[in-house]
Image (cartoon, rainbow, N blue to C red):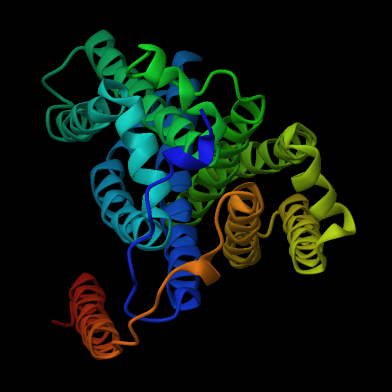
Length: 347
C-alpha cells in the first residue's frame, strides 16, 4: 500500500498558514516552560523525599495544583494550532494509538486530583500514603508525556501507519529510533527547568538549601540534556539530519542559535544567577520549540507542504481572535496587579 494514499486531504484554512505556525511555536514554548517547571520540580521533590528530605517535596507540592492547571490550559492552544495546519496527520496518529491516547485524559485527571489531595489532605495522610500518592501522580505525568511523544512522532511517519491495517489497532511508535531520545530530551529538560523553578522558589522563600539544590539539578540536568540532544539529532533520518548540518540554512541557523543560547544559559547557571538563567531559559525553550517545528516540517516534506493547502483569506475571525487576546491579556494583567497589591496589604 502506498503510504501517501493513507493521508487525508488537507482542509482549507482561513488565513496564511505562517500565522498558525508562529502561534503554534510561541504557545508551545509557553506550555513547555510551565510543564517543565511543574513536572521537573515534582520529580526533584520526590527524589529528595526518597532520600529522607521532606522539606522540598512539601513546598513544591503546595505549588503543583495551580502549575498543572496552567500547564493544561497553555497546552490547549498549541494542540489546536497543530490541528489547524497538520490535522490530517495528527488526527490519524491519534486514531491509530486508540486506547493509549484516550487513556491520557484519565491518567491526567488522576495526577491532577492526586496533587490536590496531597496539598489539602497533607496532614491527614501518613508519610507512606503521601509518598505513594505523590509518586503515582508523577508517574502519571510521565505516561502522558510518553504518549504525546508517541503521537507527535507517529504523525510524522505515514510509512509507519500500515500495521493498523494488519490488525494492530491501538499501537505505539516503538519502531521509530528517534522516539527514545526525543522523549528523554523532554524529560531531562523538565528536570533542568524544574531545578530552576526550585531555585527561584528558594530565592522567594529565602531558603538557601532550596536554591543550592535547584541550581545543582539545573546545571547537571542541562549538561545531560545537551548529550541527549546530540543523541536525538543523530537518531533523525539522514535527510533531516543533513538539513540541520547545513543542507537547510534556516534550520541550521536555528540549531546554532539554540546551542548558543543553551551555552549562555549553562554559564549563568554555574555562576548561580537564577534570575538571569530564567530569562535565558525562556529564550532557549523558544528556540528549541522552533527546532522541533523544523523537525516536523522536514519529516513531512516528502508527503506534505503547507503551500499546497488552500487559503480562503477570511481574516475577520483572525482579527477577532487578536482582539480577544489583547483584551484578555489586559484583564489578566489587571487581575495580577490586584492580586499582588492584596499580597502586600494594599487592596
